[in-house]
Amino acid sequence: MHGDCFPDLDVVVVGGGAAAAGSIESVLAVAYPAESLQIFAVGKGAGAAAHSFAQVRFLETQRPAARGGAYDQGWRAGSAAFVQFVDGVSVLDGRWLRTAVRTLQDDPDLAAVFGRRAQVSTQTRVFDWIAELEQNPPAGEVCSFGPEVLIRRKALEEAGGYAPWLRNGEALDLSLRMVSRGWRIRCLDFPMTRSIAPCGLWRYIRSGYGRGYAFAALTILFGGRGGYWVECVRILVRGCIAPACVLAGQLAPVSIFTGWVLSLAGLAAFFYPRLFLVEKFMQRINFSEPQARRFAWHSVLVVLPEFFGLLRAVPDCLGGLLRRKLGRGSKFISSRG
Image 1 (spheres, rainbow, N blue to C red):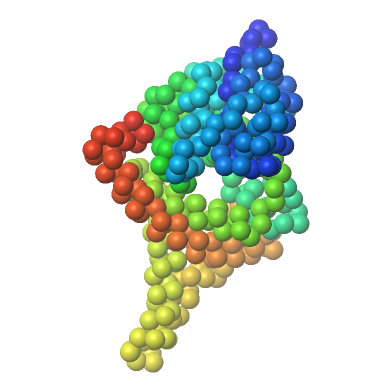
Image 2: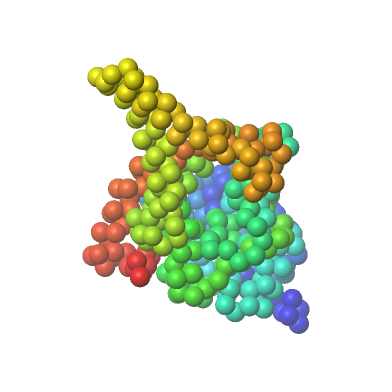
């Protein structure tokens, strides 16, 4: 740290319920002066955990409590130059804050930095393995960050903060607005957090749902910027059109030949990753053959919750665009540019 000067730092623990106690304890144990830290706990169920620690301020979430609202409420409650966001089911690495703050101090054009996010058990739990793969991009300059990140307050203020009405994709939305203003984002090859809750089937489904919601939201709000429309097309083709072709081939009043063609085309589109992408995963992601097959099956099945998330995003984001047109949401949502 520059001359042993530790700038003030706000840490916002979001959600987690009772597990937030473990997250807060990890923040209190970091190698960073306690007098320079202000800790906030935000979200349903985190109140009991926060009240167990005198150093923590609990923020009651507003109703309706969207994820974007919890994140926005958290950073606005403080005033420090840097803000670290931590998921309530994660523990913070004790060395992370010093490393991350130093990185931001050394590069004034950096808006945010984040590090590696580890899961409970990637060796025995397939959902943990998938989650860790998807939330850890290669180190270096990136175009977006996830829910756990250290952000410069100046960049937060310039971008207008998190969109409080977004149910998912709030971090990707903020990332796009920061990058559009000339800020940069960096992923560090350094441990940041570790999940203390396994990623079971329900969390896996919720993650896919949230990803579909985020892709649709960003496409509606920003158009082609960010390239998320490509993901929306993938989800629509494989999660909607492909099953529809199978049903039409079996139930629609068409010839037997046409029915079989429709059904086979739909099945080929739905199972495309497992049928055609295993070798590509082995070459580009350096998987072993069993890992590539496992990831291919994930790519097949996750499109279903992604599709329902995409459907849910449409009314939310059309409402967000309407609020922007009326001028009430302009500080949270950037223009298409």
